[in-house]
Amino acid sequence: MITPEKQASSELTTADSVFLPVGFIDLEATLDGGQAFRWWRQQDGAYRGVVGRRVVTIIEADGGLLIRPADGKDSSGLGRSLSDYLGHDQDLDGFRARFADDPCLGPALRGYSGLRVLRQDPWECLFSFICSSTSNIPRIKLNVGAVAEMLGFLIGPDSHDVTFPEPEAIAECGEQFLRDLGLGFRAKYLVPAAEAVASGELNLSVLREAPYAEARNALTELHGVGEKVADCVLAFSLDKPESFIVDRHILRALHRWYDVPEKASLTYAANWARDYFGEHAALANQYMFHRERLARRATEWGGAHISRALPEDGR
Image (cartoon, rainbow, N blue to C red; front, top):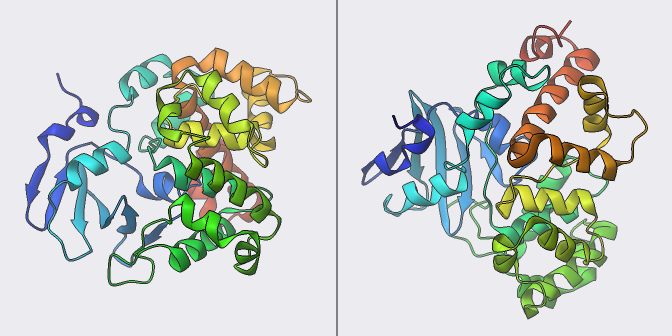
């Protein structure tokens, strides 16, 4: 039996839309939860963004997603590109079966079933997560969006409808240009990264096919790219499902649910998680992160946030 997540080839396409029968995908959690930074929520609940050189809107529909072009072109090719972007070939059935009774992931899977790990453009992903150092999601979106709107090509009617600039363009503009756009100290890391990618010294396409450890080592050779940033890029753009991203919130969750030492190093915790979660580490990471974030908001902010957390987390 073909599961909904594997039905991308059964998409229903018309000139002005594509329906992807991929089951439920939580667009807010997936597109606006810290994996990608150039999606904008619309008044009708749809999300508008740029994938490759196409501007699209995506909205949840019964049994899947409805995708519409927003750049004046027809919908040809959108089904395949969006299926790929949304990671339709992830082993969700195996993940759910393996961790159905897990003390942390089991409740998260039942409560937040629509999370996916994206497959983004590696260069934009690398740039975005170098920007993430000592930052937050709104600021990262502001920084990445500012650079795109200054250096990218306009491909739709809205100012956000721009391609992400090629590394050559960023390398040519230089560090001061990025500082003037508000990227601060991150500029001194972004320009060398752009130069490495533009010159071919760092071939991101090759890293997609390389083993995890080799790809991670190549990324961390860049100044400003530590283990956490590297694992973000590996998980969200380079097809490394064994990647696991650890910050202080995830470390706390690993201690709470799996008895990882409370004062373990982030490196130790990430290695432990990769061994434990294996090929499902990136998915496990996202479900754990989402559960912890909503629980933290329920505790700190209260109000409507309590209802968004799991019952056992929202009290």
